[in-house]
Image 1 (spheres, helix red, strand yellow):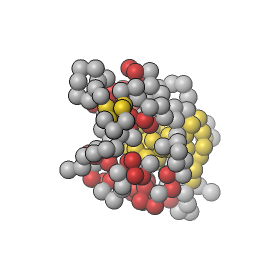
Image 2: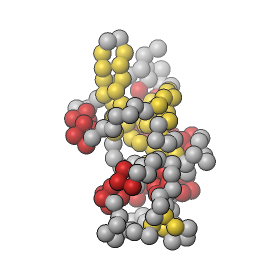
Image 3: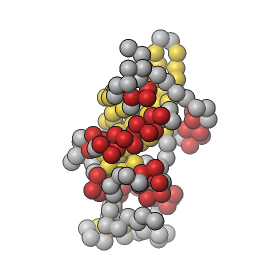
Image 4: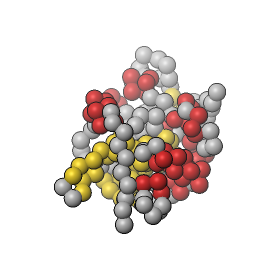
Length: 180
């Protein structure tokens, strides 16, 4: 079983609403060479209690390096994006990858690209998050009729998806194919 060890990249990259901590900001409870000072204590926010790094808990990441060495954290929580084209709307499940801002090209890691490809075969795109608002949506070749990668830059809306919204959106198996 994998363990965090000295990795605490999630404490820097992910937002924690109860602490008013934005993505990309270092957590106030994170101390140099000590890690989280409230880990498994009453002061630890519920968001942190229930969250897990996908590298730790899912064997589909077996070929990826530990997050602090790879410079990205894969969120275990799915999300979705809404695509609008030609008057129709489609919700697509996305895996969220939080990138260390010091390494903005970390999403080009060949092992991560291979992981994205496998997710795309399941109808899941990838949302690369650089901070609380800047992101890159990546559609791996299984989404494209020509077998090409597509990267779409964009910002995020102010709306947060609730767990109910996410479950409703992901209830069906959404799959899109990019043409031309």
